[in-house]
Length: 271
Image 1: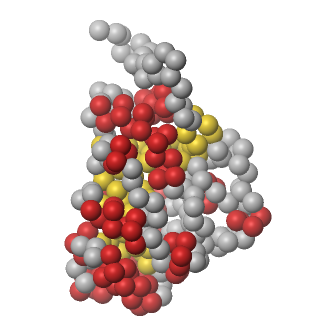
Image 2: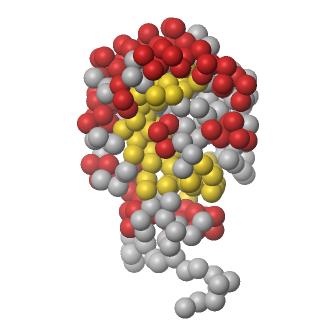
Image 3: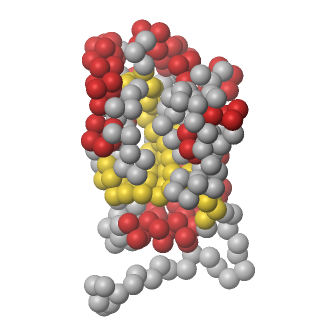
């Protein structure tokens, strides 16, 4: 048995002669608590991937995609980020390197936890994720995927996922309808039996709730798996919007999700 301070050696996951597709990663952090949705408050680590197929005005991880003046102009603060920024920019990493980073944060081999794969939009990198998720699941970790629900899961990817945290975007996101609304992808996620649906609600909650009702009905989403989440990058605004929406959400059979990490740590990208 190695000494407590002995370096931990990860098992090789790359067979001789095999080259895995590289992952486009923004950053890896934890341990923390899952901040949103049905798993809020649970211990986890995050693998935040780079790039997104949507451009939400209120996005709190715009550093994963707003790297041009045109994209930055679509965000609320208009800030353009550098693709090569060391902390949160794009990094090409193989599965072994991601495992090593995770293991440095928490003993994911011997003390399994939730691994939240977020973005950006992680469903854009499903095939590249499979080898990483296979190893993490083999060690007993629970894989949660954060997605906007515009891309359906592949069978080999879905087999490794314990939960999808699906956040379909409403008109308040600033994305055009055809880009953000993909009923077939939402229905496929629904049919996995692993999906929870979380809708960001702004101060204009009446309009937002009407749009949520349309999506829930059109895609036949089970209301008991739907949660309204107040938008807000600080505790005060998050709670104020929650107070406005909670009764209407409960009447519909929906749950309510605070942004727990915002309540605890504010807008800290590493928590």
